[in-house]
Each structure stands twice: as C-alpha cells, then as structure tokens.
Figure (cartoon, rainbow over the protein chains, first blue to last red):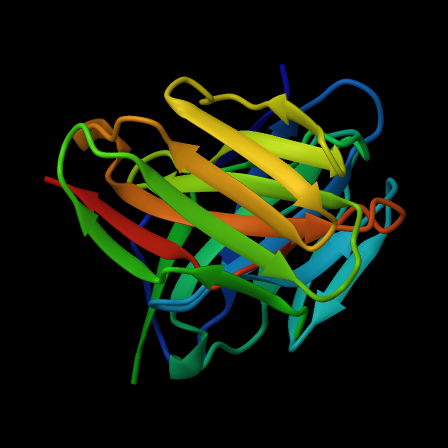
Length: 112
Length: 112
C-alpha cells in the first residue's frame, strides 16, 4: 500500500538557518503530494501541494518539488524563524475518496 | 479558513461508556473524514464518508462507527470506549476536485 517516510526529529535549528525536511513516498499511480503544518494545540493546515511530477509547491517561504524519479517531496526554507516552530507532515493522496496517507510528522524547533 | 467545527473539544470518559464526537462543516464539501493522531503514528484514517449515508472503513476502524445523515454533519461513535482509544481526533473535509483536505481543530479524548 501507499506509505510516506519522513524524519521524525525533533529537528533543532537556529533562527535564519536553512531548513530541509526530507520526505519520500511509495505509491501506485500518480499521487498528489502535500505538506501540512500543525502548531501546538491546533489542527493541521495545508502548507503547500504539488499534483504532478516536477511541480513546485510554495507558500510562506517554504518550497517543495515533486520528484517522481526519486519519489521525494522534500520541504525547504531558506531562512527559518522562531514562528516556524511546529510539526510538519508530508502526505500523499491518490485523488480517491479514502483520504490521505500521512508521514509520522517532523517536530521542528527554531531557537532565537 | 474552512468552516469546520468539532465538538466537544475535550472529553474525559470512563472505560466502557459510549462516546460520540461531532464534526460540522459549512463548506458543503462532499467528502468527510475522521482521523486519530497518536505519538509515533502520525494521523491514521478511521472512517470516511463520500456522501450522505455513504461511509466506509479506514485503516483503524475497529471499535468505531460513523453516521452521516446530513451533508454538514459527520458523527464518530465509540460504542464502548477503551483506554487504547485515548487520542486526539481530527475531522477533515474535501471537495475531491482539489484533492487536499481541510482539518478541524481536533477533539482530545481521554478514556480512564
């Protein structure tokens, strides 16, 4: 079945550092790929998405490129802020009715 | 933000008691989902609905039932709560054409 693998962390960085959170997936067909962010005590918010190979999703300074050849969708940001501290989830969806498949989440901590 | 509310937001109950969680949407989206979030597991799909009175099981459906009598409401019932069902429960909605899901704020359930 479909699966998503991402580093669990915690990942601790200093403010203004470069961020990469790796995400790889296994899926049949051509899934859509997503990054969600969860702040403490809140639900998940869609951060960005890509629906086909070589698409780049971007939002709030975060970017991820759908790489079919390496089955990856790594999240990057050039300069992180303390306010980026959260849990980040990579997910894939086949476009069907049966929901998304999530990775286990990466806890990101940004220190001033 | 998508109009999704969950009630109650917090609940403590005893083993063996029935519990019903409610998800209400104002977006008129066709698809609704119930997930549970546990440390080390990410989010796992419990049940989903693809229309009024149309529901199906997800990855971790044992011990749970659902009902959807109106487009806007999706109920999750634990017939006889167990300690292993202590978790944070999230409802999500999707209009399918865009594939991504939008999440509610969550319900924290503790079974003692």
